Image (tube, helix red, strand yellow):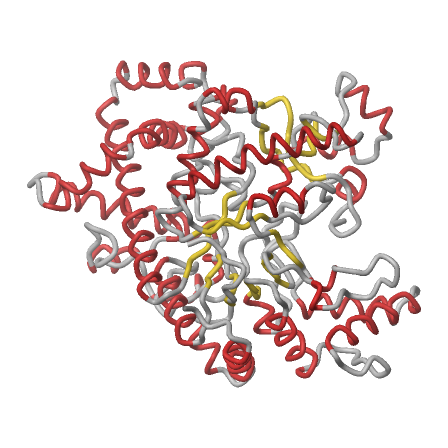
Length: 571
């Protein structure tokens, strides 16, 4: 269902990897999502927003996936009921209590969890071959149907995964042998190989994993529908340049540029980002080619996302109008950190970071961007067939963006603490916030509330004390608290005021990042960086257990209370 302005609803944002349940293997999985859906239903929460669940590469970033369709195997629940072919004996052979204690003790240990789940899936596949494929059982028939119905993307994906396996998991196809650089060449290589049977069996295994993944996620989708909870997924602007998509259909991508974001005041995580901006490394799109194909690749991406979710957020919707682009890939960022603009041009044949296909100024260029981006989003709306679409429109927002999104009926984002009156710098009156918006205090890219306030206090008590003091006062007035005696720490009273103020906004949807409900400072991602802590932070316990914890019970009780009070229960 789309978002209707008159429909008031509340939700939480929780990355799947961060969720827990008592039997998980060191990372959130579909069972953790199922339990979280039940938790949401019990607390009047109508939306569970998640990050992308497509298969990732070595950086584990859900925004740098190696497939626009294939799902991440490490997020699968590993039980005999959920994985055809998996048996208690296989689990006992590969898992012991010492290993479980290590995996469950802190953040996600990807280098241990991924190989473990791969071994379990591989062993389950052997059993599936023997029990089901050999005897043409109903499950074998279901699997055969999946192979046929998903062949449009599955064939090239399984070929890519087979080649990755030959290169010990390395998806950087630009470094592969010539006979592996195109689909026809790779198919011919497998046919001629003396190991063709083994290679084709691995392709079948890769397809089996995706069959299991879509079975689990579609079941989760149906479970959420039964509980009147909507799962809102995420479609990033980009895809990894080392993905099955780029390898199989290079004509759909422009590898001469790397998409990113310009320098701005909020995200300044290191010297390169402060000076040059964020270089994500994702390829751009030759939009003329996509128009010629009637946007088939995008329509497939949206359709497959909606098989597992009830709607989606478009990450960095600004990129569909114009994208800030670098003439070098992120692995070369270090070369440019200390260079002047003139020195950088010598290394790039005169090309500099810039907005493509064109800047927004003068106004006539901006209007061209507005028209072209609007046309692309209309394709998205058509492909979504009435399901909810939300546009993440944060960052350097061009002046035409609010108008275009309003015309299309696509809600953008509002982060109230950053919505300032241009003259007084006061946080805007809540009555002035637009209805057709999604309001939140933070996305996965932002500091949680507790850290946000901690930073304000540090500024207040630091060298720029006067400016910090004024900012803290503005926040206190926004919350309706005493601006003469603001606390120097994130108190329970302050936290409660933030929680209730958000649901008071007229915006149709309000979403709390789960760490903001808890009042913790955990952070899931630091934009512009590639560190081991990114995409690995986990909650202390399952949502059910956290709600029973004395530190958090009152916070969840408050959330349920204010949702009911302000009429945001799911219909």
